[in-house]
Amino acid sequence: MRILLACLLAAALPAHAERFKCGHVGGSLTFGLEANVATLDQHTTNATSARDISASIHEALVTRDEDMKPMLLLAESLTVSPDKRVFTFKLRQGLKFHNGKPMTSADVLASFHRFQRVGLDRAILEPVVAMNAPDPATFVMTLNAPFATFMENLSSITAPIVIVPSENASAPSQQLAGVGLGPWEIEEYVPNSHVKLKRFEAYVPDTRYDDRSGFGGYKVACLDTVTFRMVTEPGARVAGLQTGELGAVQDVPVLAQKRLKDDKGIRLETVENYWLNLAWPNWSAPPTDNLYFRQAVIAALDYDEIMDAASDGVYRPTTSLQIAGTAYYTEAGRSLLNQHNPEKAKVLLAKSGYHGEKVVLLVAKDYPARYATAVVMAQQLKAVGINAELEVTDWPTALQRSLKGGSDWNFFFSAMMTYLAQGGTSTLRTMAEPSPLFWPPGKKVDPAFMAAFHDVAYADTVEARRDGFARAQQIAIESVMVLPFGIMPKVQGIRSNVRHYKPFWNPRLYNVWLSE
Image 1 (cartoon, rainbow, N blue to C red):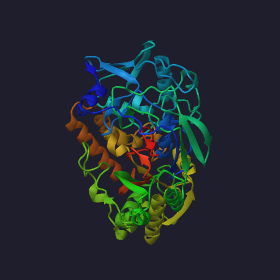
Image 2 (cartoon, helix red, strand yellow):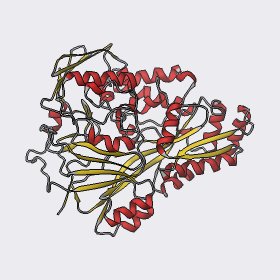
Image 3 (cartoon, helix red, strand yellow):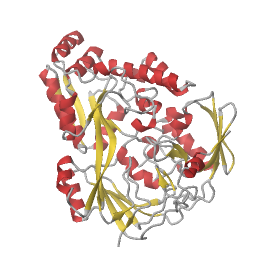
Image 4 (cartoon, rainbow, N blue to C red):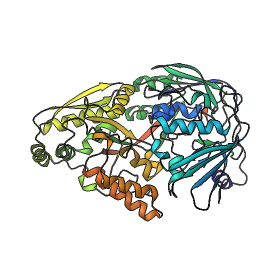
């Protein structure tokens, strides 16, 4: 059985489509990021801020298209055996890394081995029992059994399996050199300041396409350089956009949107359903190690008040861990969301044996929406007698502390972004073994949840996978593995001289040029 995702997608394009050409070649653009970047080691982080930059530097065997469906990228073709256990990838030829080395299957194999060792989402490869590179152009993976969602998982862009030179694949976690296969290479990296990229002259566009599509497609670096500048203060981002110091920015605040809408030199673009605003409880730290205490917290919270503060009133209430209309959408556990029931909360607190211990809300100042969420949640918890205290850091610090667990925090404020568009296993993976973000003791998750997760991953029918997702979501909400608050859009600002820029889950500055 031959799977040619790329060709199928290309065939869907209008017959008269012409291949993309830069309207102008040259110039430099500075993009204003909303958060600091902790690492560019894409294997080991699911931070959006890292992917914002790494998506221009690194490429993977498979990725996601414009509709977030799996597509081939570095793979020329994929053949699946009749028993659906053996996946044989033929690689595109003539591709080079930024260090000038040609890419071969040995680099792919080494990259996958590294991901098995240190990858944040290494559970993606748990069904794989063998990987080999029989010749320089071929990479083969063998599964222990048919796996209905394997391509969905393999193409995940949350912490993607980007391909790096084999000689770099032994790098420890978060110490991977930034040598990739993308249209841009690193010229300068100054932590907490900026990352400057320059055009990679030896980049070979994927000629199966006429333009970019999602994280793949036909990519061209029209600009000489792109600088991703970390501008965490919203007012500074807006000011930089207005003066032209920044060619485009993430996250224009609602009040600034009203001010900029009549500015002829700026256009505003919205990505709907961008964030699911949420918090992770820490089950390894008292008092959030107690189920009654966690249930008291969700009983106390007024989600609408939280989301109104977080989004300046621009949000959608959440009824699920998925977006309505998507394959795995379910309202299982909905009655436990947005309860706003202080009396119930006080009864549950008494059951938990809580006696005023400090409850630490760990939040990053880089993301104002998350900070506002934490502030309002702290107020609501104090109203029912919980000694809530904010601990405010920058995003890299907060993220690293959350990934290490520990007993020095109780709630970590974050968001799901691309999970929502990626499907069931991707959404649930952060709550499943081996690396659940809510830190259950020993990282051992409720067997019933893991059984449901297994059904989402392995069941043969869509109906069975949906049923598994509903069961998993019910357990996640009942036991408070996560606190989902609401859904927010993302509004980006772009200078009018920046052409062919289209907002996406992460900024794509290839196939973008500056008008003269």
